[in-house]
Image (cartoon, rainbow, N blue to C red; front, side, top):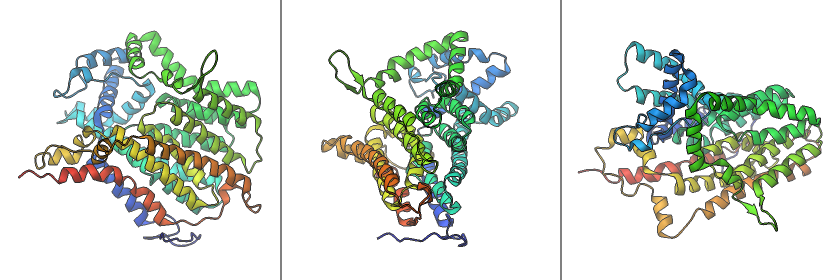
Length: 487
């Protein structure tokens, strides 16, 4: 059914070649461009980009430590939302200051141009410019993923396909372009950190992860088991862990002590979406008290990581499986936002490319991606994601307002379907991928010195099928909209 192509070194790169060719790149480009034009969850990025611009104002005025109070006051006055929206919906600066600093540096050229010659719609330009940052970082992730794979794989051609597998994932299109978030930043930092980890530069690994934790705290769940696997000296282990959370601790404590607005904002966030509450949501009932399933599994993963002493050839796959298991444990038992799922992608890529049965790994990845996309369509696909897009802005006068924006959602509601089946498919795919990787590593052929040195065939058909899954998300709302022209 799917055409297979044996990958051989030395074959020239062209339309189709031994490494990703023009056709392969075009498919990724086309899907990303379609997502960029037809969808844009602008709400969060719109506010975050403006707040980063405000941070630049405060820096140049010598008042950066009052950032959170300034943003809180402006948000309470509806300063970050268009006039058509309820001012009460104007978001405050809920993120770590490192995120705003990084985005402020990226926005500096636009900021300077606007001060020299005011731009026609500065807010829109800021949001689009911030959106391009995610795209640029995604391309950088692609090249860094290749370099990470080259460390683990003797075959450089295989490493290039691993990079392509990463960037051609529907998770990239959905989490980065459609959801329009900056979660690609911690993904890049995780990839850079893993490069240092496999080169046994653990201090640098911890520093990269320390920065990643300022964007999303979840990388700490990768850090601890991986350090337990690599470092058996308790004192040094604790030093590395403290180094990994040091930047987050500093950038949290300083605003608490210097900016009253920070505490007020965090109190508001905790009331509506407290992270700690979800840690204890899934429990095992006990006689005296209950046990958090997430914490129990995470503790056991760390214990296993500390006890096992894999051979040098097995060490990388053990580390990848532990990192993947730790993050999967989070997504299974803790409330998550859909854009966070991209944090799993480096580990999914490396696990698939470590399998002897490479194509079966792709099938499992397709299964978990399909479950994820259907879950996201039912829960998170709102009209705003489409009506904020470039396409809708240009064509809104030519077509009727959206009456049935999300056909898949309405079909599920009418027939009583819930997210149980797709969510089960998502986590069954994740669990199966872990299980197959573990069994594959135990039973691999004796002539394979490393799980990442397996001989493999690239079936482009499977690659294209996986990439095309994002059309399940993109096409139904678009078809529904175009089916109702005015006049």
